[in-house]
Length: 201
Image (tube, rainbow, N blue to C red; front, top):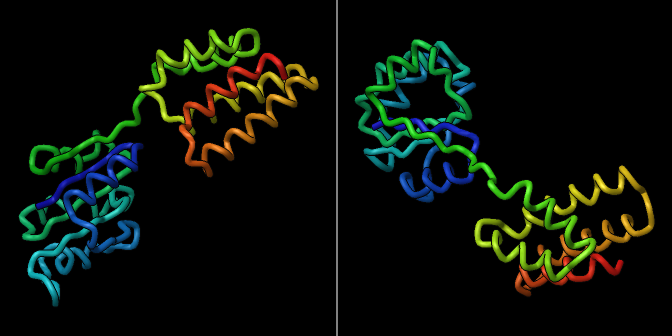
């Protein structure tokens, strides 16, 4: 059985690979393969296990080998091909799309992206209001990523106006980033505390 996983969200794809193949499986780099290697991969048995679990990474750029994949869809082994992107116009893709399962793992678009910057701008005037705004979106956010967006906004502010207050905000954000990665306190509590004190920096 062959499955093809594609898309930019390698974290989700990795979790699904582990769910399907287990914690122990063979990993093969697609770029290193020649067409002569395919029979031993897809039809050859292992010394320890009759049914092998195999992950092949980034095979599609190796076009000659990828085009041969259609000849091995009857493999007795459990094989997942992991691709960053697939060319849906390619002959190999057209040959495979109705014969194997192809799953796409897209990165989620962040609906709150602009609101993050509004929260930072608001915090510079009114920390309590910024914390209220955060309360509406934090269930959809990841704290460390949110902190990274705050840092990017603070860097833009500093580039526009390299004043003492902007510099202090950046120092506080670097401390917040470190705390988020090294403490057992609630990450959102730390972020809220930062938002409450920004206006007084």
